[in-house]
Amino acid sequence: MQAPSLCAYLCLCFVNSVKKSKTLSDIRKIICFFVNEFFESTLFKILNSIVKSIKKSYDASFLKKYISSKGVLQKLYEESLLCFLLNFAYKIASFTSGKIYSLVLKIFNGSLTAGVFTKLSKKQIFSYSSVVSLFICLMIVCPHEVWNNLYGVLAAFGFLAYFMARGYVKKEGMNFKNESFYLIFFLIFVCFSAAYAYDKADALRIVLFLVAAVIFGFVLSNGIETKENLIYSLKIISAGVFLTSVIGIVQRIIGVEVNPEYVDIAANSSMPGRVFSTFANPNNFAELLVLGMPITAALVFVLPKIREKLLYLAFLLVDFLAIVMSYSRSCWVALFIAAIVMLLIYDWRMLVPCAIFAFMLIPFLPESITDRILTIGSMKDTSNASRLLIWRGTWKMVKSYFVSGVGAGPVTFAKYYLPLADHWALTAPHSHMVYMELIIEFGIFAFIGFMLYMVTLLKKSFDAVSSAINEHKAIIAAIVGSLCGMAFVFAVEYVWFYPRVMFMFFIMTGILLATVKLVKKER
Image 1 (tube, rainbow, N blue to C red):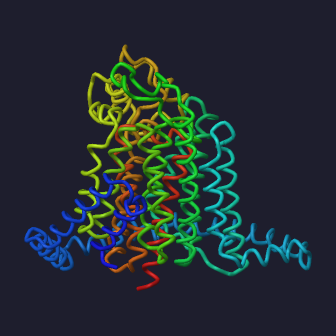
Image 2: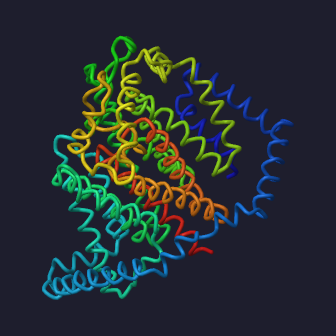
Image 3: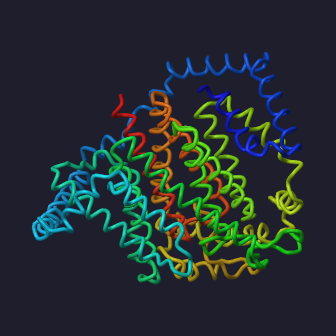
C-alpha cells in the first residue's frame, strides 16, 4: 500500500468507526477532498520532482560518503589499547558468567524446571530480547510509589550477565570494535566524576543509574537478532506505554487536583490538574510518551494485518489523549517535532494528509489546551521565568567548572550552585537542561562525547534507512523522530533527573542500533 493511500486509510479508520456522527462525517469528506486535490495538484508534482533531484544529488555527494564513513576517531579506537582491554575484560566476565551458567544447567539437567525452561525459551515471547522488553514494560507501568531505581540497576546487570553467559555457551563472540567510541569516552568521564564529587555516595548512585541505562541499550542492540525479535519487542514496549496512558486517562476521569508545583495557576486558570500516571511528575510521564508513541506509530505502518493496525492505531490515540492531559508544553512541541522528522524520513508525502487532519482538529481543542499553548515562552508564566533565573546561576557554574564539572549527583550540584545562584532562585534540584547539566556534573569532555555519540547514531540511521526494507525504515524513522523530539526537551528540562526516563532514552538508542544492524545483515 503506497504512502498516500495508507495515510488516508489510517486517518479515516477512526472516523469510519463512528460513522453516525455527522460532524466527523463532514470532517472525513473535507479531509478526503483536500488529500485528493493535493496529490493531483501541480504543487505536489513540483515538490516530488524537487525531492527526487535532492535524493539524486545526495547519492553522489560528499555528505553521503561522510554519513557512510566511520570517522577517524572510531577507526583509531578500533585498533587501540582501550578496545583491546575492553574485549579482554569482556572475555573474562563472559568466561566467568558462562561457567556459572553451565554449572546451573548441569545441576538442573533432566529436571522438570530445566524442561520447562528449555521449552519456553524456544517461544518468541520468552526469547532474550522479549524478556528484556517484558521487564521494560513492567518498569513503565509500575507505580512511582512501588518502583525503586535499584530494580533497574539490578535488572540491567542481570541481563548483561545472562547475555555474556549465553554468548559463552553458544560460542558467540563479542567485539567492542562494533561499539561507539564516543559512548565509551562519555562513560569514562561519567565514572571519573564520582571520584571528585562532594557527596561520593550520591554521585555513585547517579553513575550507577547512567551505566545501567547504557547497559539496557547495549543488551538490546546486541540481543535483538531478527526482525521477529524486533517487532515483538516493540509490541511489548508499546503495550506498556499504552497501559500507562490508560492509567493517566483514568486519573483524569477520577479527578486530579491542581498542583501549584506543576503549574502557574494565575497564568493557567482554565487548566485542570495534570495527569502523571505511574510517574512522579506529569513532565516525566509526557517524556515517556514522546519516546514511546513513535514506535507505536511505526507498528501501525509495519504490521501486515488490518486488525493489528487498528489495535495499535487505537493505542496511539489513547497515548495522544494522555499526553494532551499531561499539559506538558515542551513534550507537545517535542511530539510535533518527532512526527515531522518521522514522516520526512519515512515518506514526506504523508506530511500533507496528516497536517490537514491536525488542522481540522484545531477548532475542537478545549480552551484549557489553547490557553496552555499560548503560554509557551511567555515570561508571565512563572515556570518559564524561573528557568531563566536558574540558568543564570548554572551558567556561572559552567564557566567556573566546565573542564571537569563539579561531580555527579544533586547533592554536589546544590553545594556548588548556591554560592552562584541568582537571589530570586536560590534553590534548584538541577539546571533544567540536559546539555548544561552534562557539563556541570561531568565536564566538557563528557558533553562532547555524548553529542558526538548522538551524531554517530544519526549518521548510522541515515546510512541504513536509504537501503532498508519498509519495516526497518519505519522503525528507524520513528526512533530518530523520538530522539529529535527529546533533543528539544533536553534544552528545557533535565530529563535524566528521573532515572526511568533515562533508562527509556538509552533503550530507544539500543533498539535503533539493533535495527541498523539488521539492515546491514540484509545488505
